[in-house]
Length: 411
Image (cartoon, rainbow, N blue to C red; front, top):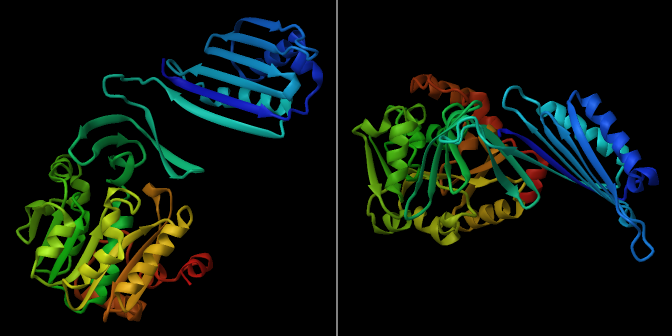
């Protein structure tokens, strides 16, 4: 039953009346489109409805395919039609043929407006839900997604739903409440960008606090700095740590066994409010700003974090996509500017997140932009930070070189 299911709702069709009114004309169109797409017709049935209250009846038709079916319904009084194409991919992948068939029919109806939907049906391994297609919404009008070749674990904790998949694109991939968090093959984009701009700008970071970050990626990047003596991770959900230790070694690279890492399970707000310790760096490695972690993306929490920074310290965090959620990004930067004297937004494309992504460094004293590309390269060499896949001296400066639309948004 594994296959591709396509639907199309068409409005304002500019095609000939015959296609909307005549069963034979519509049948002929469908037969020709099926043959052109390389699909195999088995049988068909088309029916023209009688006139109703002075309006012509439409046509309903179905073409049985060796690969599955095509169904068509027309509404001539509205110049509308609906199309339904489903192909099975059990023995061979017929997806491109299905796409070709649908596009040919849409072209024949020539609509003013169209609404298309794609659905991956079934699985080659139902018990593991292999070949699932997982979509995530950027906003109410945009989404993206990736195919999973195997579901490794699903767990509902008291806080959230955790999922781990094996994927052809990113290797092991981790989601929380349906939101992509990290993956084996692209984690370095996010973790290196959220850690090293502030860590390298600091002359000798010795302590760091990570709020969230239960996958271990941020802590692992922090501990690459040879002066770092202690990293505290305050993670809300202990199951995130357990799942990460089990599946995401290519993200944390064994950091949970490093004696310099101390893991606290509990609410990040409570930890910050209750500690008397001061940290050179604070990394807010949280779920997205519009999730249940939203309380940690407020001016009140930013001001609280400021109290646990040592002199010359800085906080780094991600602030979301200025492309798809500009107002949220704008509000977060404004709140940071209320809490800190210096806020440096930065951005990069993160493959797993499917968009250009915003981050920020905030401090009362530390300015990462003041570190030139040459100085950054020199510090990287002095600290022997060679195991980096994204970040370098030129990238350090480039991260803070904001596109004009991002600058305008924040101004």
